[in-house]
Length: 462
Image (cartoon, rainbow, N blue to C red):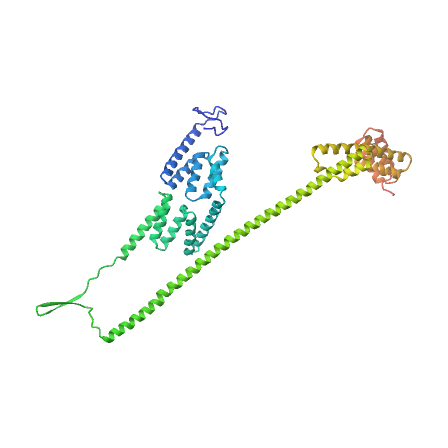
């Protein structure tokens, strides 16, 4: 036995040796659960399945992790034809104990049998359809569905009981008893089965009493002829010839009338029943075909999804191959000194498609190229500024600032602001001077920037 809190092994002590929690009441609950499990096991041994189900449910109420009780409950459900309930119990059991659990074998036996799963699925659909027919008061179709269920799943007790109930409703007590006896073979002591049998006994006994005929006394007339006593019934008639002909004609009329009102409706009813059965079989066939069509459509959807995923993987592979090719091109251009070609190759590749090693190489090359580009561009921009070619200087320094606005300790931003001020782009210059003041206070650049901000006009004249 394991502790319910820390799952440590328990001994005879009242407290867990690992976490110290009191387990006295817990042990009593487990012992009670095992007692009801033993009761359920005994009842199952004599095929009192419904009684075993009741005992095992009580056992699980006391201790829901009683794996033996839950697995046995699943086996009993499976024996009674209720496969869905059995699978539910085994799945719960497997979740509580993933290893060394008999539920694994039970689930594999069922799930690895496609024909059995299909039979279970059809049985559930037909039983639900039979219930719908019962609610619609269409008992003939319900009986047909239940017979189909019993032919494929003869141990489904609920189907036998519902069929017997329909037979009892129609007064077909012999067929009802036969169906209930078949249910008893699976579950010997089912209370519903026994209640239906008792109801049949009561109804059939009342019918037999009602059908008994009361013997009538004949009314006779006695008279004497000499020494003889003659007894003659009072309803004795002397039929003459014309009365005989009249009786024959009346008999013919009665026969024709009985044929019209009794035999013809019976034939019509039989034909209507055959039509109903044919329609039911046709509906079943259509439903089966629709299910096959749905399965094919689902299969096509899965195949289309797989094709789409394969295409995406192919495109991703092409992108990755292109990225590696461009990385190789950039590496070769970088080592040959062609930084511009290397920069272009790096800009065109997708770094997300590279592995970790290739990304390190990519970042190393890009970092060095960017560093050289910044240095070269800044020097050119500063030279242009000193040569008073302010437009060219502004263009070169703007590239540097776009890549690294802190380059050369803010000098790139400062000289770009100077160029913009001289070019009378005061709005841009004012923004850049303010950036220098905010990010590099107490420097000569910040002091000069503050002076230029004060001297610049409010509006751009350019």
